[in-house]
Length: 65
Ligand code: SF4
Image (tube, rainbow, N blue to C red; front, side, top):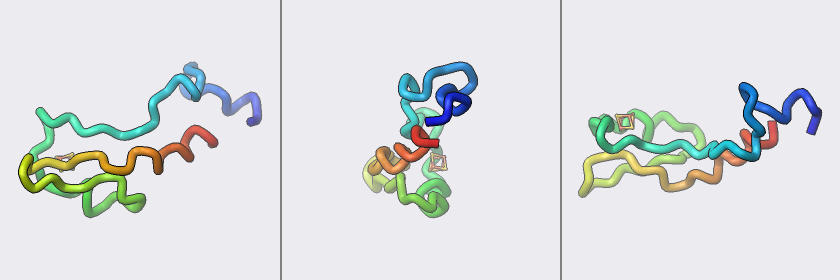
């Protein structure tokens, strides 16, 4: 990796958890993230009525950039 890309905002890229998360206290269950994420990271938990991160590893590519 090119030296200039090894850090993101001053932090080593391999020290960052790139996976998205859902703050269940703030999630209102609108489902926008489920329907709009082109990488299909989210699913909708019918029982919880909230989005959940089902495929966090699809964001591993961010580490490569
Ligand atoms: S369903 Fe997704 S977009 Fe809607 S509030 Fe919850 S986390 Fe945000």
